[in-house]
Image 1 (cartoon, helix red, strand yellow):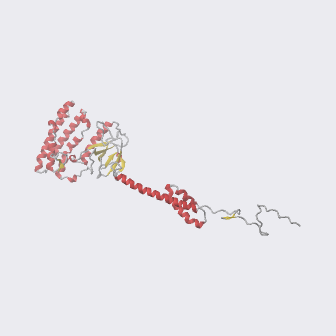
Image 2 (cartoon, helix red, strand yellow):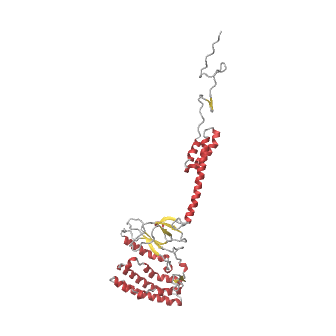
Image 3 (cartoon, rainbow, N blue to C red):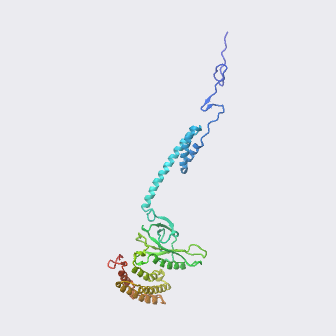
Length: 387
């Protein structure tokens, strides 16, 4: 009798197992599949490490979190070791690159400043404005130091400056500041300019009593264009400046450098010198300005002559030249007072013609020489001074 072959096995049934046993389930890397066992959680520190490491400013924090995650993951069984490794590596690279850039950039900045990258090429300079300046400060302006030739009541429009040490070359130095007089509003720029100019002159002589010894500098100021009656900046800043041949030291003079006779002489000559420095550019074109200046010169010269004669205890060898200077100032004072009363420009110039253009410089030179004060060396003729 023929036995029929067994039926083919169903693909879904799998190979037959031992009698009475169910087929074994498939096994995955974390346990039997389909049994509902959850996967270990992902480490938040590892994720944060990678994310923060990609942000340049937070890369150091990403580096730290990556290291912490690598230390904790073996103990807590969480996933994310690869993320922590990546975050640590990326964070370390970013931190290293930023550190290198800062070092190289700092070195290049130092080289730039030493080679003249700033206005004056000094690392000791600091940016500021005219409003930050006080008496004694040395500075370099961003714009023009003086008004253009022929400008009337012009003022600096760019207030940016570099404040520099006075022992470095510098175009200008503040010799004094003061506030405009009165609490009322002033809207006339010409009136403010006039008050600023006149107010700076005595401050110059406080700062440098012996104006003869100043280098080739001019003096100017910065002043408000208008002021209100309720406040605002009313400060005038006065400075000495040089267009060329920058000073390399402070121009402030120390009274302790002079003896008693020299101090008495400089004090006596101050009224005449202040009157001389009170001349403005308008003197050359405006009759009223010229006659007003001539009157100030007359009064200042007469006062200086009086003070020179009143000096006590001068050595005998100095009395003659000092008296000769006083006499010359008195003579000039009479001429200047006459010019101050001129009715026309032509008449003013005729009266101002002081003996063909001579002034008191010869007598002043002799007086300074016997007192031991510096004078220009006439034989050299090049501006050198001898004491």
